[in-house]
Image (cartoon, rainbow, N blue to C red; front, top):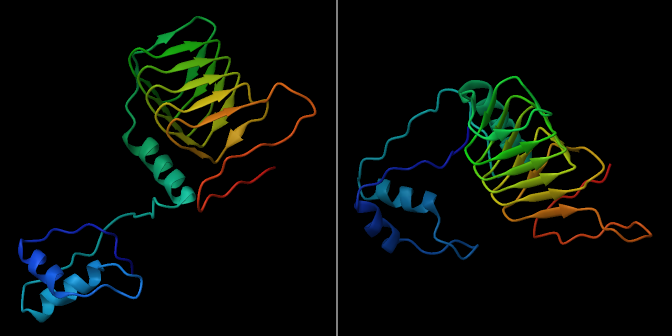
Length: 191
């Protein structure tokens, strides 16, 4: 059983928080505040979640949640500007003011507003946020957050989460090398 992190409190929680001490981690813990409510004879109820739940703080769970949502809630809409050379198949939602040039998009896929996609393969189970740019790139089963850029990557990107304003591009110089700026608790896998 997991504590999924959705809470509804009355103002009584503020007094409970005032009455607890920081944990060994130096933080006020929500579970301690709930216990304080119980100790103060306040009504505390729980509900068992029916259906699926994933820890979307983990990449693989987030990608699985993306897959489930695209499978169950995606409406077909092609509001963007799609040229004649592009091929769109399956359930695809392309938001307004997005340009698709000489690309293949195979759903389920959702592409946000104000994106530019050129010479790309966007494959099943991919969600692309607003204002993203993809040029000469192949990607599938991935999530790109707002304003991400993927430029001239000569290998397919799969099972990936690309953050806001992140930029992936091939370096023009030789010899070829890998160069990273990787944040805390990140995981990089080179295949």
